[in-house]
Length: 446
Image (cartoon, rainbow, N blue to C red; front, top):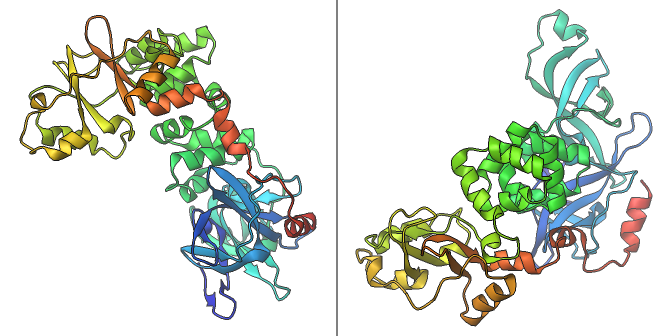
């Protein structure tokens, strides 16, 4: 990250992309959040931008502003501040620029020879005045633009990365069309889908679209499931139908059905037709039920095993790290086929019971038949009451033929009990909307 100045606790130079996701601690050593971005104020001419502070993600899924004046230590894996943090939700001002969200991947020109290069990172350094300034830009050659001395000598290499002074590039203070998102995605590669969804929600519509287009199908599917429904519809609406169908193919069927349910009937049917038939079938089944019924809320991919499966085999399935914890709480025992709609539903086995049995035991010997499954037409209130009555986190849904067709989890129920815009409210509402004089002083200078 840079050579550390042991007198101040700061590196001599900090490349900002490396700060993304770094944990932020108070003086007592308690983690309060993680760095999402860095806020800077552009200045006239070739003066380097002044760093105003950090955007820090805190729980529950809210971004706040931490003035750079309150940061006491910057390290490769930790940032420590003086303990004063205003939890008012961060809102970007017109005079402010987000380094990761708006500078990375931008195409700029070298002032020396007008060669077009792409920004891969920027670095900040602390001046003698104690202000932090953006002084360096890491760029990558892409082979476009005027020749310059290196090109005339045959020394230019496409893809070469190098660092120049802030004054050596131009174009970072203007709006760039088709900015791209490769380096931004590399920065946020390890961030959880829910956190990346929060980042996308805060971006401009244009930048959000650029990032969404650049995500691979599986990553985008995970992120879409965490976004407010309005953002989902906006993103999918900007894709060509084939790409949209590919993303829907890898979404959880219940999430895909919820999204498709928001689209006009003609667009919905076209996307269902373009989806893989195997993936579209459970989505169509879900769409056949009203949204606020067990059938409309259920997932069609619960953990299912045949009666001759062993405890070890059942435990192996619920160890899947990608499995929803509520779905992993119990295993449903069914006659083959075990994919929904299954053969005859026999009952369930709670994961705690599995942990108490010998791995070689058959699940048929420990199946619980006392808990009756639900019918898909039961309304939301009945489903919620059932889960509360029996202290369950999930319940089987069975059709009139006795086949398991899905399971409703407690998070499915909560999603329907909460207001339609609850995800957006979580992202946008702060616990304390009072002002912070020091923060206002720092940001007003921009």
